[in-house]
Amino acid sequence: MVEVLFKEFVSLCKKLEKTQSRKEKVRILTEFMSKIGPDNARIVALLISGKIFPEYEDLKLDVGLSTVYKVLKSLKSGQTLLLEKPSTLKEIYNSLRRIALIRGEGSRRKKEESLRSLLLSLSEDERECLLRAIFGEMRVGVNEGMILEALSYALRCNLEVVRRAYMFIGDIGELTSKAFTNGCEGLKNVTLELFRPVKPMLASMVYSVVEALKEHGGICAFEFKYDGVRIQVHKKNDKVRIFTRRLTDVTVNLPDIVDLVKNNIKASTVVLDGEVISLRNGKPLPFQELVKRIRRQKELPRLLREIPLIPKFFDILFLDGQVLVDLPYKERWSFLEENVDAEFLSERIITEDLKEAENFFKKSIESGHEGLMAKDLSSVYTPGIRGKKWLKIKTADTIDAVIVAAEWGHGRRRGWLSDYYLAVLDDFSGGFTIVGKTFKGLTDEEFKEMTKRLLQLKVREEGYRIFVKPSIVVEVAYSEIQKSPKYRSGLALRFARITRIRYDKSPYDVTTLSELKRRYEEQFLRKQRRSK
Ligand code: AMP
Image 1 (cartoon, protein in one colour):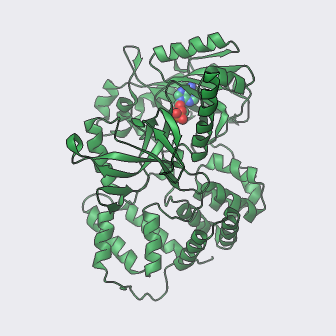
Image 2 (cartoon, helix red, strand yellow):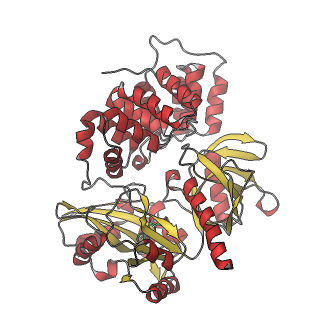
Image 3 (cartoon, rainbow, N blue to C red):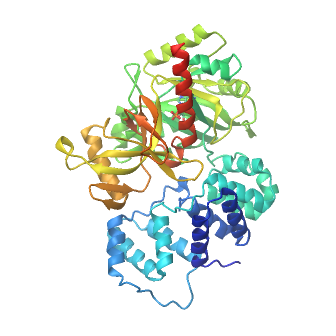
């Protein structure tokens, strides 16, 4: 088995940080990963992409900045333990895992002690690299797309094969390990498996039903866009598991949906994609209320009564032993219809008629939903991909952004971190890049909770501003996108306002810089059209 020293990983990071060219970065990564075996390559892919642990594990280190400072202060400068042999990448990674798994009484102290002995065993360079990994700021300029390219070179495997395998596996670490274990042939055979969730298919935004019809060749399926929580249900006979869009298993929080699926869906094996909502007096409950059902497990018995859920399924990915993702939408929907009662299906029409589509949009809004989803009738299901085959049409312009820094408020908001720096995903360099700032949109309750969460994520402090590990995702409405000399991204949101905290989304789900650029361009075109 190949042993990789942690210091070799540190050198790799330094090399990547110094290299500007994307192509050269991919080459360096390919060369490094090809030589180290599946398990080490898995760890490299996770750390380099700023993840540490696979998303679906929901495992967190839970060591804040203050703990790290305390530990660093207690180590005298230059103090390192003389080890018989230097630490390997695997040893360091396993130590991080052990720290994350410390829970319960006295866990803060135990984590601190473990971190202390871990840092003590490292050189200054290694320490810095590890701390960057802990705070999710590797600064090596590598994104997941580049790791996929590196795998494609290393295995001499078509990039599309690697991408498709990633869509089904959903975790960059596991994909990397599989790639180096089973080679290109192995990746070709990767497909959907029962009880292994896949990343859900995503949608791009358009501003009107006309645009959607045009994009899809004059006819599309329009479905209500529900403002709920995305679920993926896997069922085999009496066994049911439910996953969120971040692939976390939330079966225990949704016993009512489990029963409903068991009692109503006759197929022996099935995977369904849908949204859960809750209706009160016929109107959907706001998202903020709804997510309590998923987040507050202790209060479940009460919440089960107060917030009864109803699923609205809109896709079927697996049925009676067959993977359906490569069938066109139209055919998948007929299987869906055959297996799910109409009341649990997303409301929809298929039309080429503009008026009919516009009325359906109105109907969705009047019923309290978010708008429409337009789906291309011949499209296959592409997990994790935000393409044009699914288009969302909403009334307001919103993006999903991640908070990367915050400032202490004054006046009425004194004592709260209430001014937030909003960032999108820079899909070229792999980092997050700021596109705006806002203090608008949250309730006092939410400000308080946000302050608590942000302090736990603190990475560094500059006066009244703190920088945080990118983790909290918010949906942000804005009036316009402007060019900005102030932000490195070159763009800024005008009149940004938080419309809700997206507990269900990961920072890697946020809007990308190229999407924002596209919207900026389109905004001009729309204005021009209007002024004609
Ligand atoms: P967004 O989160 O704004 O990118 O919009 C996409 C999300 O809308 C999906 O991830 C689903 O959670 C949700 N959604 C609601 N209704 C539908 C539908 N009929 N089809 C697909 N997604 C839907």
